[in-house]
Structure formats: C-alpha cells, structure tokens
Amino acid sequence: MKIYTKTGDKGETSLFTGERVPKSHQYIEALGAVDECNSLVGSAIAFFPKDHSLKSTQEQLIIIQHALFDVGAALATPRKSAGTKKLEKTRFDHEAIDLLEAWIDQMEKELPKLTHFILPGGHPAGAMLHVARSMCRRAERCVVPLNQQEDVSDNVLVYLNRLSDYLFVASRFVNHVLRVPETQWEPHKVVEHTL
Image (cartoon, helix red, strand yellow):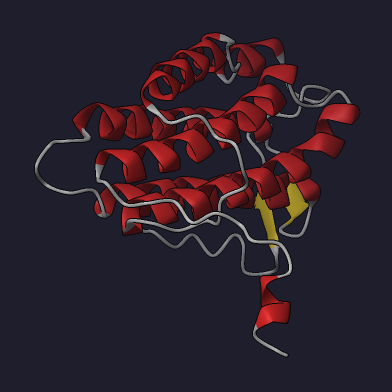
C-alpha cells in the first residue's frame, strides 16, 4: 500500500464515518492537535536518559501515546452521524482517565510541594513534556466545541484535561529525578533589566 492516496489533493479528507470534510474542519483541527501532542510526547521520550532511571515514566508515556490514537479514533467518529458498530469500535473509556490520575498521585508523592509558578524548561526531556502539555491544552480547546455539540464523548475531553495535568507533573518529576532545578517565575523581572 502506498503512503500517498491522492484523495486529499483537493483539501478534503474522510472521517471514520466515510464523510468527506475539508482539512480545515474543526474535527480535523482537533485530530491534528492530538497528533501534534502525541508527536511531542514521542520527542520527549527520545530525550530520556538511557540509564533506566525513568523507565516507568517512559512506559507510561508510551501507553499515553496509544491512548492518544484512541482519542483520535473517537474524534474521527462523530456521534451524531456514526453507526452503532463504529461508535463501539472507537469508544473511549474512563479507565484511561483513572490511570492518569493514579500516575499523577504516585509522582506527586515524590515531588516537593509546588508553592510558586515555575517556568517551562529543565532537562530536555522535561522541557519537551512542557511543550507536549501546552499542545495538549490546544487539543483540549479544539475539542471543547465538538463536545458542546454532543458529537464527542465527555471522556475524550476529560482525558485531554487530565493529560495536561499529567504532563505538567511528569515534567516536574523528570526534572526532579534528574536533579535539574526548577526555575521560579519572578513577576516583572523584565523591568529590572530595562532600567
């Protein structure tokens, strides 16, 4: 099978229902944002040290990448136009949310209490998780209108919201394990350097 099909050459693509939509359609915007988030999670994994100090976190992130494909399948199957079989095949279950919450709770037990805002950064893996977090927030913003139209499962929206929390905590956890200090936000710091 060739990678190019030429069916999208006029700026359209198909949802899982078979419906043709413009590539600028809000479903495709949401799918694209989820795909970008997934790619950034993969990029973060590529920066992980090879010494296995973060093996369980890396395994969690790979599970998340699989879940993001499931999110994409749910987004590509609008509830108002999909048949029962397709909806069942692409449903997104609450267990994925429970898993994120359990992982967040585990990591937070080992992290110092957060008492101030921190700047995104740190170890390259931690910094990339911050980038993934911000992209996850964009994906969430793209999904909100679809959810308001009742065309996307609530679980998809909740998962993206919780995933951004997970990615924030995971970034802090990676930096903590690798002993890279967090940088505290200093309000109006720019003023000190312009006087």
